[in-house]
Length: 156
Ligand SMILES: CC(C)(COP(=O)(O)OP(=O)(O)OC[C@H]1O[C@@H](n2cnc3c(N)ncnc32)[C@H](O)[C@@H]1OP(=O)(O)O)[C@@H](O)C(=O)NCCC(=O)NCCS
Image (cartoon, rainbow, N blue to C red):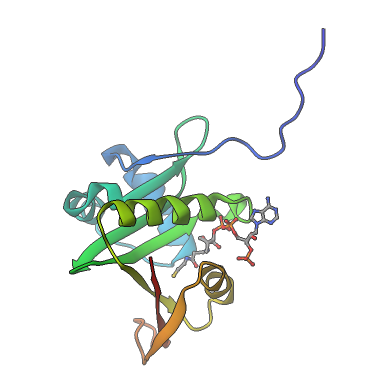
């Protein structure tokens, strides 16, 4: 009898947001984005465009990352929140989320995706640049602690 071969990176699959995800998503947000939102925010935002809220779940169906996109401008999606649990980064989870999100945007006929990012967030800026986002504006004192942001966009 042979032992199972270790697979290295545990399996992650994409699905939609469920109300039971809130504590997990909120914990990822608190650690990764240093923000605390009212728990009802997630369900209310997901109600507007449910397919724009993607969750990456582990083999126990626990969220390890998510991308919350909204549609506030005609023909455009905006990435409102995007984060992967610290221990699950650089394993391709963020790429899975972003690529699936682009598909969902195209399904809706969107022509452009926008987002905001802290100017100090070199890791995220490099990630977005790899996905052909470019800086379209500098947002002065955009964040509550006074840090500037970049407004970034890419065409679909
Ligand atoms: C930005 C973020 C979501 C990316 O998620 P991620 O799961 O690490 O993304 P990926 O693993 O797909 O890609 C990250 C890097 O790892 C590399 N990578 C992916 N799979 C890899 C693997 N198996 N082995 C080695 N490297 C790998 C990718 O090439 C990528 O490199 P690059 O960004 O320099 O091009 C994540 O860093 C994060 O949660 N950051 C904190 C929250 C945040 O800043 N969010 C954005 C706010 S605007």
